[in-house]
Amino acid sequence: MTEAPGTSAPGLSAGNRRLAVLLAMAMFVLVVDTSVMNVSIAAVVHDLHTTVSGVQSAIALEALVSAAFILIGSKVGDLIGRKRAYVLGLLGYGIGALAMALSQGLIAIIVFWAIVGGIGASLLLPSMQSLIHGNFEGAAQRQAYALVGAAAAVAAAVGPLLGGFITTYLSWRIAFLLEDVIIVVVLSGIRLVRDVPYTGSRQIDVVGAILSVLGMGGIVLGILVWEEGGQAVGLLLGLGAVSLGALAWWLVRRKRAGKATLLDPDLFKAKLFKFGVSGQVFQQIGLGGVMIALPIYLQIVLEYSAMGAGLSIAPLSLSMFAVALVVGRRGGKRRPASLIRAGFALFTIGMIIVEPIVPRATSGWYLTVPLLIAGSGLGLMVSQLNNLTLAPIAEERVSEAAGVNSAGGSFGLSFGLAFAGAILLGALSISFTSMANSSTVLSKSEQQQVAKTLEHDAQVVSNTQLTKQLEGQPQKTKDEIIKINTQSRHVALQVALLIPILAGLGGLLTSFRMMREPDPEQSGDAEQMVLG
Image (cartoon, rainbow, N blue to C red; front, side):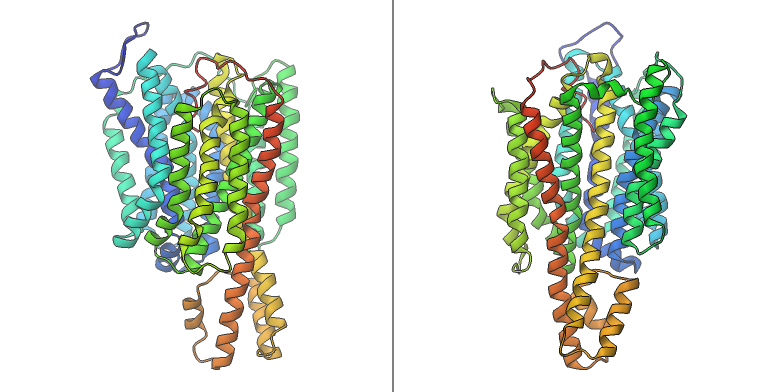
């Protein structure tokens, strides 16, 4: 099944090949899951009689839980065994997918898909990296990493198309059931996995773990509560900011005292690592903003089916995959930092071009060229950013550094999803109210009713849905509100798209700082520890 320690082989044996395929299948599910959810937003909202903001909050919460617990999940795997953590992670993800398939309301999605599934992901990813490292050696190990990495890339590329097809012609519930089928197949081969013993310190930094969860959780939850019009937004944001500051102080203090830390603060003394993690955060904030704004635009504004939305987003994901593949193999002697800089520049340019298209487009095809540009930029980043970030890290610390990098990326994704969604609804409320108040068609009482409704429940709705809600109203009133809804949605989406643009600019500035640093020699495992 697996090779004995100390031996090497030119490639994968039959048993190892099956194990590598099963690990790749697990990674495919991990990546494709969110793509399915994004292109199914309208269908989920319709079937569960919920709101766009509610589903968007669940998507952001899943990414947040994964980010908040991934460092803890790595330590849990060290303590209970990487194989056991891997199984628990698969079961958690499977429970989340099953809950999606059977859910009758948003609460089940939040509890089981977002929270339980997010915790499952936080256990699954670090344990998977350790198991690949411990079950394969030499060329076989490199091939296993390549296969799992390729599965992640393919899932990112075809996820919108696959999810859109299944949702449109079958059901989004079927898509999540198929995820469970894959997980069952992966678990059926668990005997092939040899556990990897942990020989390091078994001490736990409980305070650091709590502060990391409170820090990331407070900021993103504060944004989500603001989006839903809840209370104590300032308290949550303040708690998050203070907790992150306290975490930095605590880690340095523990390190100086020679005690166990959640993560080693000395990692950030390597400037390329620090800049690389920052770049990863900016990249994922930008991606999160795009992932929430474009599906809403395509499914609610243009009223596309999930398949139509998937086809319209495909230029972004497919160009990202193609460019990452080509540049990864033929990057030549170009500096990685220069490719990352070009990537952020192209991504930002693509998003800037989308801005004026939004109020004018009558079809998703108008987005093709700018999404190809933005996707090419993402491909340049994906092909270089992880390796450059981990390159200056000593081989024995690469796994820990990869976990920090993954946590940063997941936090950036959840922040981008939440913040872009909150800005979208906030801009919608302000724009709709302003246009209603300046309308010469709506009466004062109708203007007040609009303002009161938006104050408590601002939502992105299609003109078809709004027409049904306005049945019985005078035709002039209906036409005016439909007109205001159309115009205000365009304004709100343009404002929300500023989030990925600003994230791209932030990443671009960071890449200039990367350019000032000399290119380090690649450490032994850095190329392989990029599954996050």
